[in-house]
Image (cartoon, rainbow, N blue to C red; front, side, top):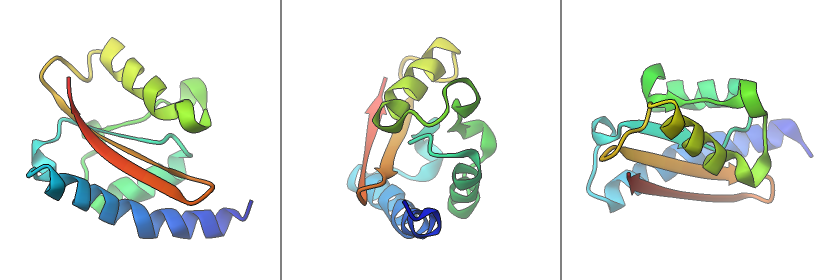
Length: 111
């Protein structure tokens, strides 16, 4: 795996993914309660959060508990955010998946 190539791919793909996902759902960033991304690594997630201008309290991390659990990272992070009371009934969460194999997908859930 070429780490710098994956990092560049992620920075090129994820911001437009977030913007397209919002636009396709008729929403603005401010209307999302919590952003839950694939838990790749803290450095990459912080870089994306800053690039997208998302406040830290609206960007969920659970890397310290579980690390990068590959395709399971979003469901695990979502469950943890719900269990911790960070995401509550009626909230909107934008989920963004990306990774090795050069795939990406996004969706918005209303819980």
